[in-house]
Image 1 (tube, rainbow, N blue to C red):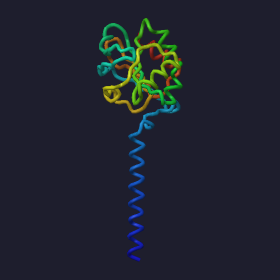
Image 2: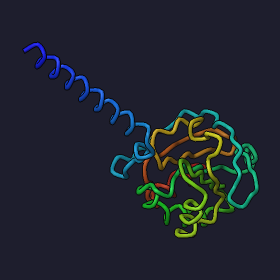
Image 3: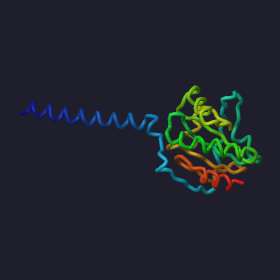
Image 4: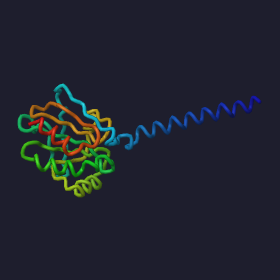
Amino acid sequence: MIRSNKFIILGIISALALLGGITMLFLSSGDSLISSSSNASTTAFTKKPAPDFEIELFSGKKIKLSDFKGEKPVVVNFWASWCGPCRAEGDTLAKVGSEYKDKVEFIGIATNDNQRDAKAFLDEFDITYKNGLDKSNIARSYNITGIPTTFFIDSEGNIVDTWVGAIDEQGLIDKTDKLL
């Protein structure tokens, strides 16, 4: 009887440890970053300074967010090639980014991705605005909790709005227009 109870207790402890391990693995995997468009949300910010960053673009050129301060508002989109909602908004970002290229700077930051897949994604959706890999934890400085996430930054370098999840064309246009 005592031996049987030991096995039951050991089995319960093992099951709990396994469940905890699976939970931690899921929470630390890239899949936990995916936000479905049905859970998309917007959060209006009281203007707060956007964290500056430097990113090497796929073209090889380096840019800083602060390069655009006082010049143009900026839309920063965090994405990944493997992210379903990111793929859902790909055509929208390509179209709106192209339409606003003279008035608003669009910057894409591929997070938890690799260069080959990210560049294939950009080619697939004909995205021509500035894009690069997040090699310096830019997503962390923006407290990204899910991708895609889009930040709307005024010409003075302040975050004025954000959207978590795939954004539709009208939503992107409306939020971009508010920057002008």
